[in-house]
Structures are given as structure tokens and as C-alpha cells.
Image (cartoon, rainbow, N blue to C red; front, side, top):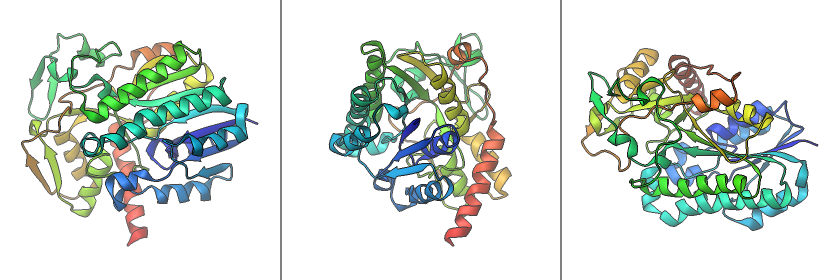
Amino acid sequence: MNIALVTGSGGLIGSEAVSFFADKFDLIIGIDNNMRQYFFGPEASTQWNQDRLASDFATYEHHTADIREVSQLEPIFQKYGTDIKLVLHTAAQPSHDWAAREPFTDFGVNAVGTLNMLEMTRLHAPQAVFVFTSTNKVYGDNPNFLPLIETETRWEIDTNHPYYKNGIDEYMSLDHTKHSVFGASKVAADIMVQEYGRYFGMNTGVFRGGCLTGPNHSGAQLHGFLSYLMKCAITGTQYTIFGYKGKQVRDNIHSWDLVNMFWHFYQNPRPGEVYNAGGGRYANCSMLEAMALCEEISGNKMNYQYSETNRSGDHIWYISDLSRFKEHYPTWDWTYDLRSTMTQIHDSMIERLAVTQ
């Protein structure tokens, strides 16, 4: 039997993976205890997504387990053992702001939980491909010291800089920088996943995501940039821009495109490898540009306020360079540009809001 195990299966990337892999594996095991609701409140609950997966996919088997507890993970790994061919670890505490409130919880989920998943895989399914969704926040605020230029709607890097053409590559330093508590816990996990590949020879891969997005995101104010922005556009909820004049730039990758990267890696894994994963120059926007697109798609005027206080460790300009991945996996490319992604988010959210009203 070929089994894929997905942590955070009710979340954006986890649920996309369940859908993507449903016809590629005999069984998809999902692990998710809806901690996103604990992090961000009822509006961020992933229960609706878990229910959807259970209804839509006969090959999906759900487990409400806490990745911080080996005692809850080990029975799953013992039961299926070497039939587990892919471990996709997407579960995380994803917010800068929230991490500072409860550092023990943040580190427990992001760092300890990742170590638990690695060790369970090593002991029970050592030949499995282990894919980890890391983050560009492992680079801390080093990107903020690049030579940036302010334009009318965004910050942009100097055209003479090597990063201008394709964005930031995997060789940007992780040291001598402020990460935020969240960024630091993800660094710990990121390095450990690499080490299990290099030291133990496991088929591990690290994907440092930019802004991950798509129609199945349970966006909240502290996490889920485009999803929450569109929700505010539809409902009239006031949105807060935190610092940098709203000109901070993010690249955005659709969840399907990211999971397709995982699929390419699974078919030809490179142990201990690290890849930046985002929209690159293909799909990126500033906060102001994203708001304008939300208004255009929704037909509503945004209700927003501005705060001079930026989030600690936040990036002013970040665009991912995917050249390394595309060199290793030349048949992969983006499918969804920014407009098509935002339209999907809008249409899905309208449908979900109609159901709850």
C-alpha cells in the first residue's frame, strides 16, 4: 500500500495536498487538531475544511492528534510503517505576533513538533520522502537591508542589484538578524529537517514559502494576507495596514502550485535540499496593489486604517527566486497568476459566506 501522511491537513496547504494526492496514493492520512482556531479564534477554524475532505475523498482518513505529543503520533506510524511513502509536514503556528504571546506553544508546535515528525518517520518509515513547509522568515529581517527604492505603490529593489531579476535566493544569510519568535522556531525546524537529510540520509526537502494562498485559506488578521484582505473587502470589515506606507511587497504562490512543487520533489527527491517557494516575479504585489485588486474583483471599496507601527521582523520587500528549484525540476512552472488566484479566493469566500448566513 502507498500512503501519504499530511499534517495540518485542514489548513491551506494540507487540504490542497489531500486533494492533489487523493488519486496518487491508496490512502491519505490527515493529522490536524484545529489549533488554528486556538491561535486566531473561531473565524480561523479549519473544521469546515476537515469536514469537506472527509466528505469529498473516500481515501482520506483523519486523525485528531497533537504533533507535540509523540504518544499521539507513534500509534499512527506503528500501524502503517513502511507503507508511508510521503510525509508532508505543513502543521505550524504561523504568526509573528501570536508567537510572542506564547513562545513555549510556538516553539512546541514549530520546532518540537517537527522533530517528533522527523523521528517518527526515521524510526518507522525511513525511506519515505519528508517534505517540510518552512518560511522565508528564516532569513529574518536581512531582506530589509537590501537597497530598496520607494515608488508610488510599492518598495522595489535597485535595478542594479543581483536580486532584481529573479528575487532572493537560498544563500541569503540566516544569521545576524531579527527573526521574531516565530521565525526563530521555524529556523530550528528548518535546520533540523536539513540535518535529517544530510546526517541520516533521509529524503528530506525544505520549502521556504513566501505568501502561500488559495481559496481554502481560513484567513485571519494575524495570518493569511490575501484571504483575510479579500474577506474584509467582501464583508466591509476594517483592515489595518501595519507600517511601510502599505507599500511592502510580497510574492504569492497558489497552494496548488506549491503542492505541485512537492509532487515533483517526491518523484525525484534530493536529500537535505532547500528551496525558496513563492510567486517570484510571476506573482507579487504590495499591500496597496493587493487592496486595489480586491476592490476591482469584489466591486467594493476597502474599509481600512493605517498604523505607523510595522510588525517586528516583517519584510519590506520579499520576492522569492525559484531558479534553483526550476533548474532541478525543469518541467515545473506556475499555473496561477495573482489575478486568477484572487478571483478564486473571492468566489470561494462568497460561497462559504452564503452557507454560513
